[in-house]
Amino acid sequence: MKTRIKELRARYDMTQEDLARKVGARRETIVFLEKGKYNPSLKLAYDVAKALNSTIEEVFIFE
Amino acid sequence: MLNETKAGQKIVIIMGIGITALVVGTFAYYMLANSSIDLFEILSIPIILIIILTSTYIILDRYKNIKKGLPAQDERLKLAGYRAGYMGFIGAIWSAVGYNMLNIILFDQEPRGGLVVAAVVLISGIVFMLSYFYFSRKGE
Image 1 (cartoon, rainbow over the protein chains, first blue to last red):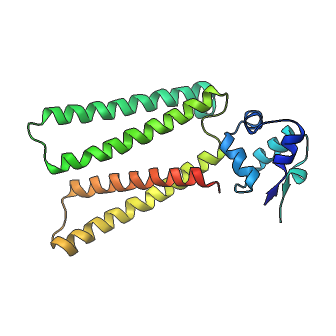
Image 2 (image 1 turned 30 degrees about the vertical axis):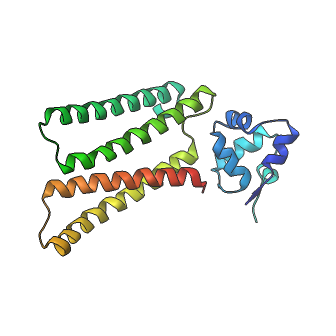
Image 3 (image 1 turned 45 degrees about the horizontal axis):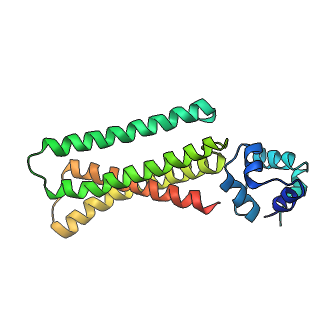
């Protein structure tokens, strides 16, 4: 799974910690999400997408 | 859930500090009450040290996150905890079987019940801790 979290985060000038705080996750979880090393729950995926003003399909790319 | 609120997270941290202090206190009392220290007691020192260091690391890590306004535990860490619990359970079963078998093969006798319980608790505990660290650092 690939994600556009890093790109979208940069667009909104948001740090990993800011995003983590917004979605109620730890910073390490955001790191793993960005690297595509963690498959989030539907709720976390939705929260991340919402925090980045995008949809789940725009943020997470399933191959 | 209690663990998910900020107050709940603080309570869990305080409980962790309390339990660690109790373990250290009980161990210190046990060592001081003994007039002589045998091999088993010397071997238990590293185990106590591992427990103290691990719990201190976890408590500090959670405290650091709470201070930054981040949750002490999120869904990834909960998942790591469940997986580590499963590995600890498997470790408990195999340590009970393995310890008995090794004793019979190596010493041609069945071990005392207390030693089997000690082996199960220690091995499953160590397997749980190592698995927890592995899964929490691994990602998926």
